Amino acid sequence: MFVLWMLVALIFLTTVFVRQVRSDLKYIHLSQQYSQNLYMARGILLYVLSEMTKKPDVEGSDNAASNQTAVTNGGLKIPAFLLNLPMFKDLAAKSGRNIESSTAQENGEAVLSADSDEDPALYNWQPRLKPYKITIEGHTFYVLIVPENMKLNINLATEKMLEKFFQAEGVKKLLTARQLAGAIKDWTDPDSFTRRNGAENGYYETLTPPYKAKNKAFDNIEEIINVRHMTGTLFSEIKEDITVFTQSSQINANFAPRAVLAVIPGITEAIINEIISRRKEKLFSDISEIRDITGGYFDNIAPYITIKNGEALSITVQSEDHRTKLTFIVNGGKVVRSYY
Image 1: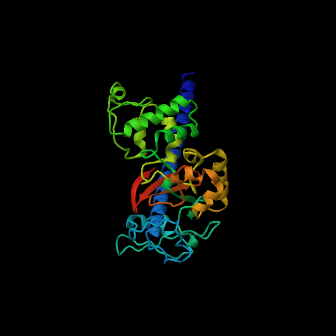
Image 2 (image 1 turned 90 degrees about the vertical axis):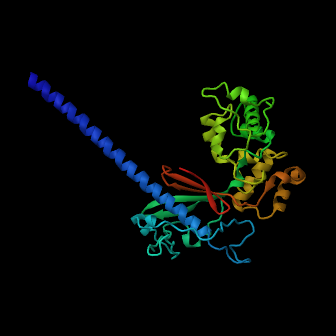
Image 3 (image 1 turned 135 degrees about the vertical axis):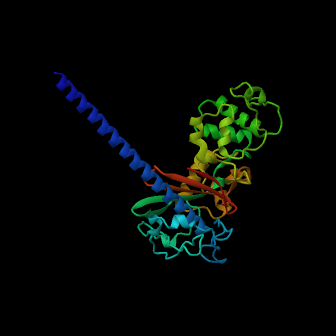
């Protein structure tokens, strides 16, 4: 009987061990796959940046449209260690263009795959609503380039605009939306006066650990987590729609999501619907097209709306399975922020 129990125990331990080994191997495989995808995503971002830093086409050519944004700080180099990886040696393409290595002796080719519903050789790498599609070694990635001014600048927005933004983002209680808006303005204004729905040091110093209101502009969007009434869940829902990298409070009608368009003073739901519907067919190329949609509301809306992309861009690469996502914020030709 003792031998039988020992045998049962041994079988049980062996089963547990095998399951653990399988689990560990699966984890290792997923980790390796994630790392590979992350390297691919980073390489694609660097490639896109290298293409965008090339001199723009001469004035009058098809690619020199006035509403396009070019990053032109002069030829970004791709590090040699990336080009030497097998995955980047096979970035095959019709375009036939090479990415230069940071070392003169290293000149591995890295171009786009033609395995796409579009010809990557014709990509102009400008902001658009539809993502660009790239395939590397059988792995498909999507590149979305959009202007940062499609988002709400939380440093420049008025308290009323912030209130409307939070309501449009799904904050159900009007009081909570007002409290969030007031707390944000108190966080960024230079004084210590607590506005009606705001929060200053008197609140933050009671927390554990205590801290003070910044009383300066946000340097990045993550700082908003420190503001009273902001939660991690709400931040995850709004982070794609807010920015601190634009120089104007004007909102880009070609790209702004519904919640951001909703903050524009004087705009109506019908106008928002019409803007979204029209731009799906073709992006606005002249502000007069907005006037045609808004009619008598245009004079109130005009100071807050634009169709120009500005200098700041968001470039996101995401794998087809959505497990890997990498974003660069580019401003004035420089990467000012990256998100993994």
